[in-house]
Length: 144
Image (cartoon, rainbow, N blue to C red; front, side):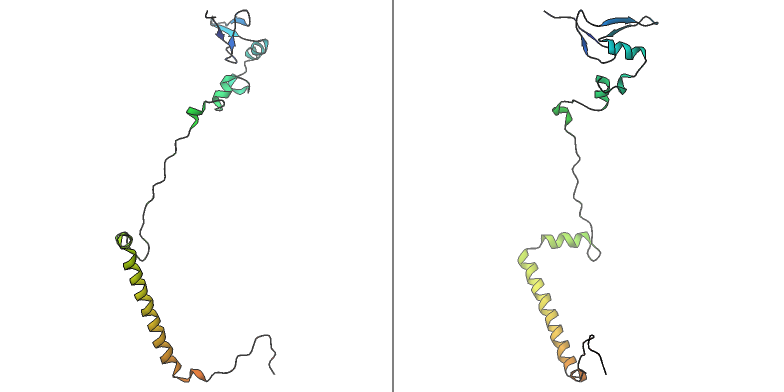
């Protein structure tokens, strides 16, 4: 058996048979009010959306939504490759495509070249008058 229920105009709660009041407005529209509290607030012309206990307020402030509808849709961030100051994007992609053995061989060659340059520099600067230097005196020692 289906029981006919009405909805309260203020709180939007169900009004079961034998409870609540039917209020007819001046314009002739019937308004069902579930409790004396709802009736009092309606006659004071209070807005249901400003009363925390009403369904209108809960709907406005997204309370009590089911979890299925609650999941937020997030846009995934896309990774974008950009050029660096010294390299263009094409050069970066070429380096990434190279095999690691080839890259390690290049790195070793560059390191050996730098070491060779340092050796030659040390030999050339060591032959000059660089060996005749005054002894270093610490800063915290007083000089006479």
